[in-house]
Image 1 (cartoon, rainbow, N blue to C red):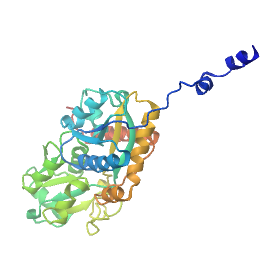
Image 2 (image 1 turned 90 degrees about the horizontal axis):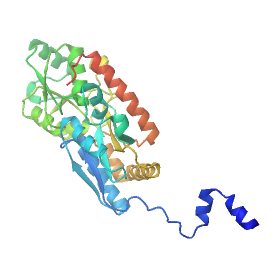
Image 3 (image 1 turned 90 degrees about the vertical axis):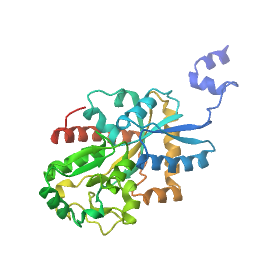
Length: 325
């Protein structure tokens, strides 16, 4: 009788530990994982494939990158938001995900209610202001002067309306008073191709997309928007050095999200696997050589970043008076 009463006083978790039928937690992952990239070829796609390669090797399970482009990343994000919250469908997207709630009147999903931030996989210190060498300008000041002499005749490309690069390019447009026309494309890759083909006069881009073209001489970088010079292009001045300190902006980030409702232990497992991948020497060096820093902050820290960035771009959209679409 005393033994039975003693057992009854034990907590439920303690009784589970005594049970011979307790089932051990299945390690994550135990089957293939999909990483949804909501854009065409560009920095998020490149980054996703770098991580997928390392994670496949690291875990013994396939990490498969699947592109679902459209609507400034909203089609792919909505797909993930509506997927099963089990950790086997993830979203790797850009800063544009925090722009969409302010730029578009309506989105198919709610960023706060339908998606769970996991971590930042690639932080970018600044953007590169890039032109085609045939434009025959060598400095940012020369470009601004030329564009002012052709007021309203120049255009700039972006990966799409509402994309972070679009918003920051419009900010540049407003600061300089150049009245350039925005030409949206379906991804950063096509936006860069448009500049290569002289279809536009300017592209403000994250480094991974344009760096190979700059290094080959097919494109020319006039300035870098970071606090200090870009380590891979040390001869390119910052916007502050080039005479435009008001356009000192960060380059954004590429973050990992899961559907809302994902169990906390699975969320942590995903974070730890990606963090381990980011710490692999070859993987880290590959990402750094693209102009990104694999920072992998904790989920709560990344959530705070997402909240701050959402407000920042809401304020910026109001400042440059962009109409919602």
